[in-house]
Length: 149
Image (tube, rainbow, N blue to C red; front, side):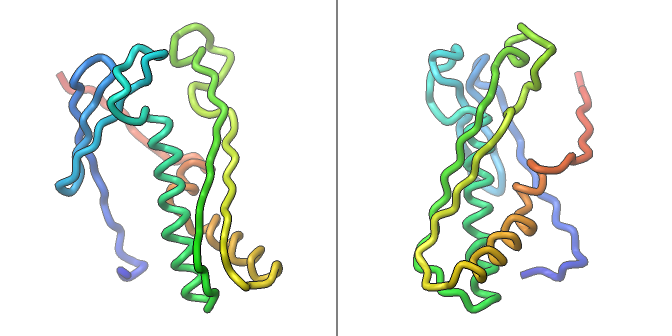
């Protein structure tokens, strides 16, 4: 773990391969973002909003184990299921009445542990509070978008 007073900067670079397919690079890794055929893509990878859910799931599992270790909770297994409702009307330029992002997201953590209900409730609250991706999704994050050409 790093000292909590240190800020770490993370970054990705992305290049459009087509109108729907993007190759993203970070720390020597590459992954493909694409849309399903129903949204004009070639289905060569998850779409951006699926990666968002996947990022939250991955973050939750890391934080779940970290918090459990800190509190002496024996987690034999953790799985996370996320589902979100998204109206594509804003993305497709058909409406300004709905938000472009998810209208709602349901997150379910399933654990195999002998911890009691009270311990698990406190654990879950701390996991939710400490998950960086969840924090970015559940709270407004200042961001700037600029253009170079």
